[in-house]
Image 1 (spheres, rainbow, N blue to C red):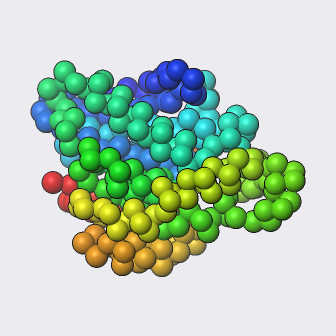
Image 2: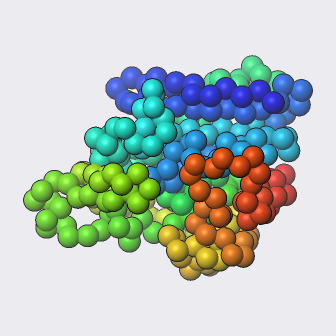
Image 3: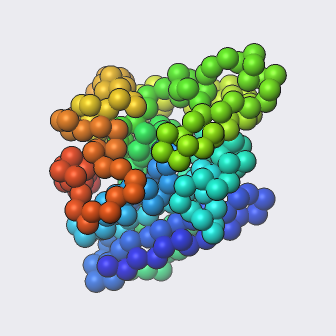
Length: 279
């Protein structure tokens, strides 16, 4: 397996994006799988690297990246050393980031006979699932969609709602990160951007437009995003496939850091379901 970590995608007028690629130099026509992390997440969280290796070993080119304003930096991509960037993040920035990553992948692997750049599967976890749904509904290059513990509505997230009067007056509100104990800022631009782009960011409408194979995976014991959100997505798009992982929490019974070389049986079940799903 060939692994390139922390490739820097420089962009004019925008913050850079860090990208990891995993693929085999022996296999040909490996389909591309792009992984989008969630809220307060990052590409190297917990067991995502082990997941990437497992999926690559079944014949795919796996790409994961940090959203440009997730709070990480080029020098420190893990956790949140840049809280100012985190506060200036929003949903449309993440959609733009994903667009630029797709463009980069198609150019980067253009002459690589090991990779089939015409077949792209998006995998999104939690908030990244919502981003993946929106992108799959508007980008014809996406051929398969997989959502893991995905949200079904950006409008009812705690990062979007709250005391709007106080938020507007102070310009910022804070969310406590239970693991790092950081007070993570959301500047009021987050809400303004959401309202300005509400139609584009409406997951229900996007879900109803999806006409490619779509696998919805959710844990039965997810306390961060309720199982009912997966059921909503499936209801909006009855052609989708819904897989419930019994006794699994929001991160499929893994954590950060994940020092075990083995996966939880719940995340292993997720990976088996994914690799069976992608043609």
